[in-house]
Length: 493
Image 1 (cartoon, helix red, strand yellow):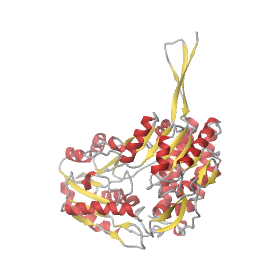
Image 2 (cartoon, helix red, strand yellow):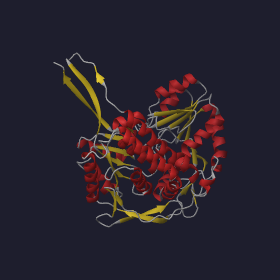
Image 3 (cartoon, one colour):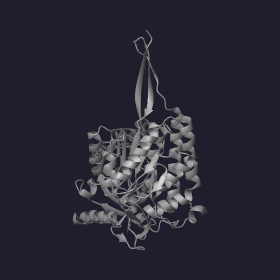
Image 4 (spheres, one colour):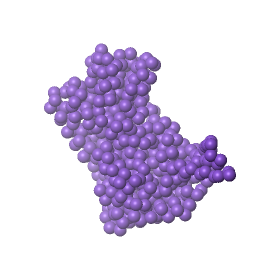
């Protein structure tokens, strides 16, 4: 990847202590409690944020409800909402260096990747939703009734958005942008450890012209603020991204309160390499699929399935190539893999690698921490010869670990790929276009990539099946999930 001069110039920012953003104002928590935010590349505290209480969350919901009910946003024509959302995208591009620095120091994202991935995706998401805001409409319905019947698309009301630690910027925009495009107001609860870009985006949204109370950001613990958000009667929809375990609880609470939900949950995607694949190109996609974002990617490809004639060849190439992937300081423009977001995530990876060793698996590459500046680094790791029933294969590790298994037939490959509780993403490498369509149709996943990995665009929906959740982000499908349909039937008698 070519690194531009503006990326090279990005350095660690000095970040002042941050407050809650409620009703267009910055304010302290009623408890005055604060949470330290750590730079994962050094293990050092860089700032602190307000730790909200259930009372603070209630204030945010009330502000969002007032903003929705008085029509300061919902009553705006779609074209006017689109103008403001396009301005958000412009400001994201204008303030890209600042956003990159904040996201990199908070999450450990390499600056060389943060601009083309996180920042660009966020800007494009707001632009895409701005276009949808101008086109969303109902339709006339033919009926034998002596009546004129039509449908209207209307916003739901107050959306509660709960986002995870791994892609704070992208995964908040994938909820806030379509929610705003549809005319809703939002209360956003970002991950406890990585809230800084959410607070920065509150500034940007305000600068773009989003009225006070329309977007509120409440930082704090999931057990208090997140739970209060799920339980609050003033919330009309829950949009959640996170682990399957927490998602199951969130969906249960929302169901008890009859709230619609969108759930993007855990993943453990299989990446299939058939014997007719272009191996050289496949290797690049394989490595990208499991080291991207240090493996902290729900749609990553941590399970590699290789046709038996290519099995040892692929392992040999991975054994030589993976140790050469640059791991290091996210502010070094040559870094491809940065630190994991917290030490607890590194410890989880270590536990799985230890399980693999206990099962006599082959460690082809990596398999240990990288001691660097006190940060939370783990070497990209390739593990071969595990049984499909192993926990290392079946469970979501959420780190830079790739398991590799052989297969003999197409049917076996598909059975292995579908043989976990997850179904968020999948992929395959083949030179046979008929096989590509045939296998893609049989893979149990919300999105399937052929001959590459992580090809994502705001126009293309993604989401899960099985224990990977339900509902879709991106595309017009996302906007539909943030609105409701009302039918109007006018008698012509």
